[in-house]
Length: 221
Image 1 (cartoon, rainbow, N blue to C red):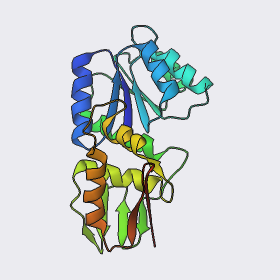
Image 2: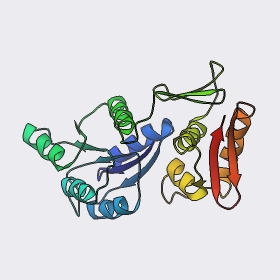
Image 3: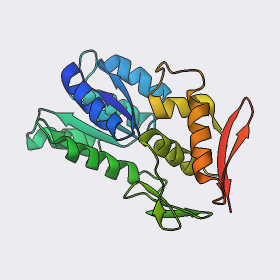
């Protein structure tokens, strides 16, 4: 998943970021409401986590602007405000879920996975490509019933390529999805990931094709 986190408590944001990245997810963090609104108007993600009390622009107004632009990104409000009226206001503004601080990080991650699965382009729990079977619930790639040993970033790469199966994905877009928008990475980081994943699925009927200078595409039998 690619997640946008809008949270001005830097220690809390760092904890969330570490937990999500440990599970192979990419995250972009913003701590100012106005900056977040601009960022969300220019960049997409699988899900957004937004606090209410923010400098510059409230989380509620960020969500309202998202929905006025017609942006369907799932939004989870994460806030210390827990009154029923405040929950109702957040959901009425266009949020999809609401969690009150303090919270359990495992529950947050589970809710984010559920929100990402409920995006308009609903995908099946299992998808077959050649000899490979991807289990979205377990986040596991099976080959003839045996799970492939995919480190978190290789798994995230496979998920991204499968989501866009049969379509070319630009190298820069892959880097943004795996590492976060604007994150400095080694120049050949994406190529190395592609190469490692390609070796592990070789002979399975699934193929990663390269359009030199343009990007990559996953297809197969």
